[in-house]
Image (cartoon, rainbow, N blue to C red; front, side):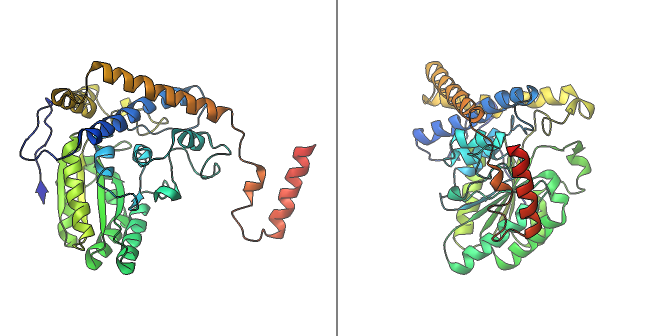
Amino acid sequence: MDERTPVLREDGSVDKAREPDLPDATLLRMYEGMRLIRLLDERCMNLQRQGRIGFFGTTTGEEAAVIGSIVPLQDDDWVFPALRQGGALLYRGFTLRKYFAHLYGNAESVEMGRSMPCHYSDRTHNFVTWSSSMATQLVHATGMAYAAKYKRTGQVAMGYLGDGASSEGDFHHALNFAGVWKAPVVFFCNNNQWAISVPFAKQTASGSVAVKAQAYGFPGVRFDGNDVLGVYAATKEAVDRARRGEGPTLLEAVTYRMQGHSSSDDPTRYRSQAEVEAWARRDPLARYSKYLHARGVLDEAKTSEIDERLKAAIEDAIQHAEATAPPPTTTLVDGVYAEVPWHLRAQYEELQEALRR
């Protein structure tokens, strides 16, 4: 297993020998992607507590892992997300209006309200919907990667998972198949230390998730998931390796889930405030901001401008979502069946009559 030291240190200084050669425009866009995630978490948790949306899973503390891992992918590569990759879809071009349409489940939702909030997907961005059954997306990612290899499209698949998903059977099936067939897939584990209330120490007897790759015959790499430059560098290496036909890589980003597993969770019942405060001092956004300030890419005026612009875009999207009608009742059956069965058609017509009355 390859365990790496940070490229971007906690004080904002950088290992110059390993600093990625990224243009200032990309570095600034990465900051905006991370900042947008943080602002969305704050706003959406308020919306959920007000009863305006039903459910939300925050990404606060894990922004570097999300954005640093999505940047190396090409636009036509495939992404198979887990709960906290909504920011990755936004980085790929998904609009905030579509993002909130999904959260509200209205008529402009890509999935017409059929999926849970935070289960984002979009065909135009090769971002595949997922289920709350952990690790199932890894098998799908492996299958898509194998298809890309078979068809020689040159595409790579990225399969995201949390540390809890590494205990699921589908994790092992996906990694075994990918290793045998050298599928061009990258498995990206967001090890945020907690699988709801189960700590990582009780998840596995292995010292890490990344070490498990050895059993399947491909590299495992472990790194600081709060170091956005280190996340980018490790992911780019794995993506490039897959695209060259050298097979999969298992990446483990060591980070921390600063809030609850979801808006339905109370993390104070199973972890200490001291632990949370210790990780808060390693804030990936604060670390990256120091680096950008030192590089001259960011200053206080630019920071304020970005915040004001992102907050305005979020409010616009919320207002638009709340003014949009629910999906039409026809979507209960249309798009589900090529030919609606007679008994469901009868039930649907009964519903329509009740609505008319």
